Length: 441
Ligand SMILES: [Zn+2]
Image (cartoon, rainbow, N blue to C red; front, side, top):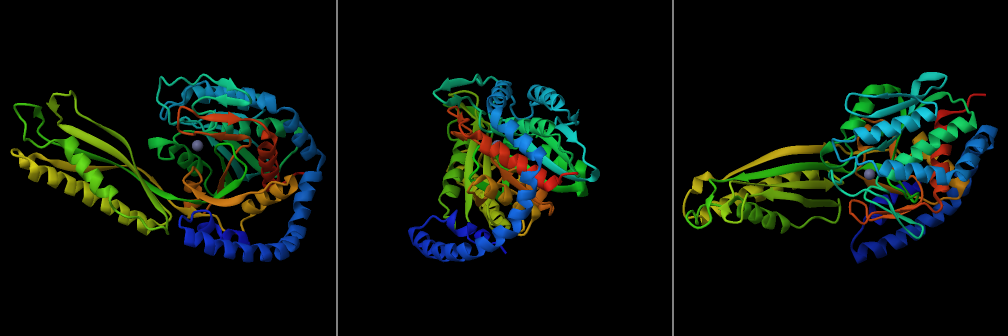
């Protein structure tokens, strides 16, 4: 058993001071246990990690990555400068296809736009999948030209997920240079539909394609190497629409107004108090409606993102949202002077992400920890909502990790990426992939 995993829910996500203090005490106790156990488990796994790392092919691959970070960063810039709004990832996918082909992969693009490059192993029935999502949250027309400021690269999408895409391209090239033949087949994929309303459709298609052949799935998302996401947070995305009769702002005044009704519902729902644990969240992310300043709108809609560490809690949250928005509609109807029956509230699911957890004794987690130990990298376990949710929910070993370097401002126009030290993330993924896939003599 790995004691580090057991502390994740509390110390990574706690919010209250009291709990932080309690956890510090707990943490100190666990550190003592780790000190004792760490030496024992390190001996056992160092042997496997050492074998992979000492292979001359591995050395060639690691060296190539260390010496070619600038080339990898150049590819990241080229990928980032091709816009890839959700549902419109084709152009970026075509360039990724070229990069995969140049790395000797057998490449195909599936019906929905996933770019899939295979590197066959001796056992085609066993597959390690390295995936990075192609899409960004930024709509068409966003300026994605990459600017520089000191060591930093500035552009929407440069980290999320320019960093992930460039990292899998780098690792694919390093495998060519390493001349390693693996037992398992390694599949590289740029997948569509991770952000926004894509509903993880790219990853869903990949999991469907490879099914029971998947030995491990690694979603490479964003830059940092300080975490391993082993738990998928469940989320539900809902569009709430309120309609009314519409009308003229002066002559129809007193008729119900869907924007006001929506606002009443949002205020009601926002007043609910969430538990600290299991942790949950909600976000009213997009609101729209109305046609002119002097018209009573006939329709207004809001898109809501609900997340929770617990499926039960998520169901409660969704029910509370439905109740609050219905009540907002009723409040507006009862405040109206006419057309009171005309207010309609409806709900549409625009995305569901299932929850899942990677077992602590998984070979995948072990392989990443071996790589971390070899490279002297420290990382903590984390929970998040990523492409890894899909395989995790089906019991397929999966994680999400970063590709190296550092970054910030993701999902904003101020997004940045600093490639300094990115070789750590590249080598970490390379060692993990080779460790999992196994080297053929
Ligand atoms: Zn991402």
